[in-house]
Image 1 (tube, rainbow, N blue to C red):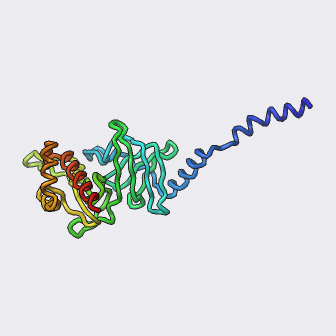
Image 2: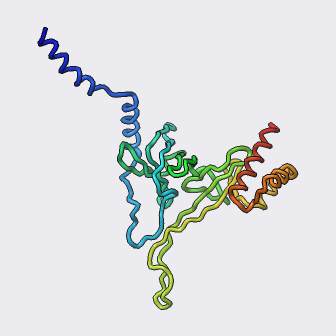
Length: 238
């Protein structure tokens, strides 16, 4: 009897160690799936001759990614969008991996500093001036009128002029941000003139809303508030 009790007492800790929670199983499955899609982490250090930051946000932020393959969604502790290389650096089980952006359908994250949410969709199905986009679009408004923020990133060559002793001896990461709007997949640049044409039939309502709230179309935040209001007017008619 004593020997049996000793065996049972010795077995219990071992059995407890062998148990795996559902959350652990999900983590293991996620790691295996993403490992198949990922590539070795590309260091953010681009060398002494490169100036600038390739990331949309240099901080690690918790969020989710959805892959085109089977449209699976994964919750991650950290995400960083590498615009220069069209990729996502992600934390997988405390390891950093890089995902090719062409594999990712969408992703979102919560800013670790401001707690504000950010949502992105792959731009490959969107067209501007007849040309497909590369990289990701941040979704600013969704509705009757869709508005996106798109940042183009290029690596500029050194332009140092020895004779004039001017210019830069380094490669420079250049970022150009623009606002685009739908509806649909064919997008156009969003500006004051375009908006005036878009809500021509609702001009009186829009002007009243703008006046009451003291909004300026020259400010991005105010412009988005106007678009959100316009979308509610459209929804009310349907």
